Length: 152
Image (cartoon, rainbow, N blue to C red; front, side):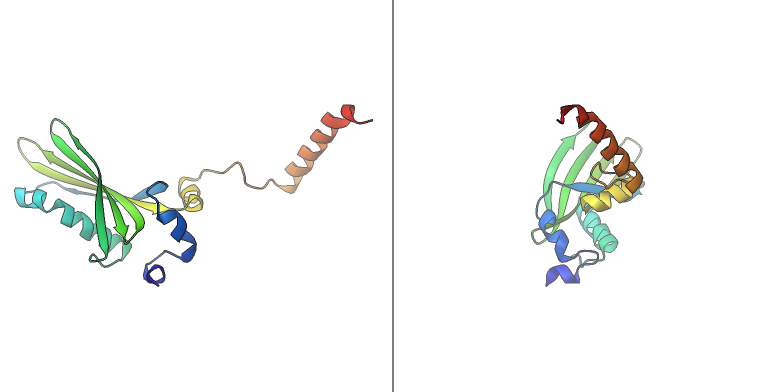
């Protein structure tokens, strides 16, 4: 199966990877300071190759979908979803800056992860995590005394 051959993707992740909504963590950021017009024309190809190297997936399997395009005064921001078949594996932001003295290209890749991996990476804790035994006893005792007046 295709999912088994992809690095870091198991069968449990298949469901949430089929939607573009979810959790993303930073994969990499790359900047080309002295870009030429040819580099700007090939920026999307560079982005696909960078993601291919980062995710260790053959670049021929990757496809891109344009999500957003924002024109600013001195730059153009392109946002693409990176897919393998139907599975969304990440999102890349390509910022093409055309300044007077030089041209620059910035690539920012955000990897698609599960909620659990997102919590581990950002060190946030869910309110659904289990309490320690001591805290659970404290809560039980407090609830017992709160409800005592309603008992007969």
